[in-house]
Amino acid sequence: MANTNKELRRHKVADTIKWIIAFLLIFAAIAAIAVMMVKLDRQTTVTKIGAEMYSIGGIAEDGTAEDGDTSIVTKTAFTTDGLTVTIADDATVTYELYFYDADGEFVSATEELSADFDGKIPEGAETAKIVVTPTEDEDGKVTLTEIVGYANQVTVQVNR
Image: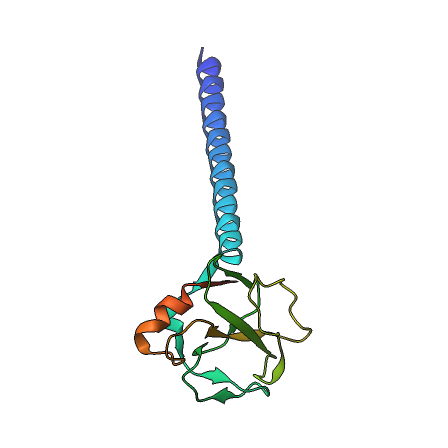
């Protein structure tokens, strides 16, 4: 009888240890899956360039900032990673993309576009700026109150 109790107690301890190990393995697997999901989510998060990112101005043919009041331009360059540009069906604007390398040196620019961007990023381009030009502005000059209306006609999205 003493041997039976001893053996029963040994089985209970062994079963408890097995359950603890199984629980820890399941917990580790769940934690690993959660970490992978967070990392993947960060890689595919898309950011929309909003109207607050624009100011009145333009960009010269050589990629340098240019004063002017006939268009709006993004204040800072944004990444080309995952860059998509869509334009509203009833848009009264055109746009141009200016591409820069990692050092901020001008690479190239698109022609004036009135359709969605085809996604072809020039080789070596790391960042870009966009210039939005109204095609039906009454006085030909962009005012602060018009920036939001023109910016919202062009949707720029990039990976974060």
